Image (tube, rainbow, N blue to C red; front, side, top):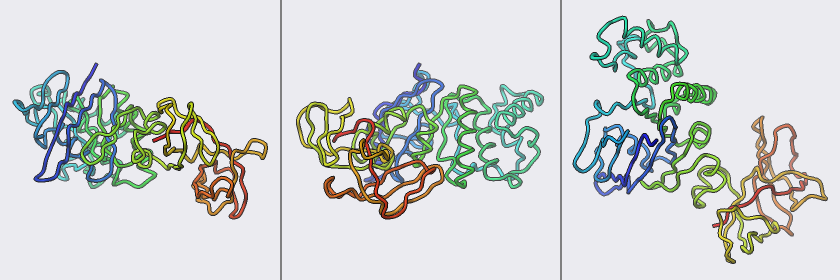
Length: 349
């Protein structure tokens, strides 16, 4: 069942087209990540869904109810949407418990005991049971974001919007908290949209990812499809490292300076010249008898769990400078020669 439907939404600020005919659909209980660089329109899209911005055209619906159209514009407070901003933005003069309780409708939570029970449920859900008496300044950045999530979830919204909620946190906390948030949303079956410019965040958290560029939605796909089969070279470079080579396509293969490589099934089989894309992890060190190409190590960047090796291929393979990603269990010295094979298929454009 479709929870959210966005049809041909456009938004213009003066001469700037922040959104241009954006269409998306999100199933109940799923998370969509809207990914793109600064200024691509992703936050404007989120604010349009929340009702903080009024589009110039299009339609936005939740549960078959029209929130926005040329004839309709429901106020933000009546849209039943939870919103988690970038910095949490808790009320500094209210306790944690009162921050969470702030958005609870009085019509449903008239009795103090019922409201307190809901607040305690939310504290337990985000792993902060017993901390309702604290003030926001007594919390860490990660704890403040948990409370912001609890506040957004407390009224049981139809949709939860997360506007780059982890960008202000350090790398270690960001990674752990996003896993906690993902687990929390799945636990209650929440439907959510995450806006981010972090590719790793989008791919690891969401059921589907929408890539935006200059106000347009370029590609919507599950994380695996998006990474392996990007719609164009710009998307390929944006969602990860990519090595590109000139090639000739024929009979399901790409003939390039690295040899003949199998084409991805989504590519055309017509004979033509093209640019192919290979991911760094598709290059695998191997023995001489298996190698498809070889080269000399120029430099390495060690990350612990993996190593990015900067390699210059031998002249017979075109003397290309490429990056390959290998396990961090083995280190490679500058000047060392490596034999490589290429696994998987390649995209062509």
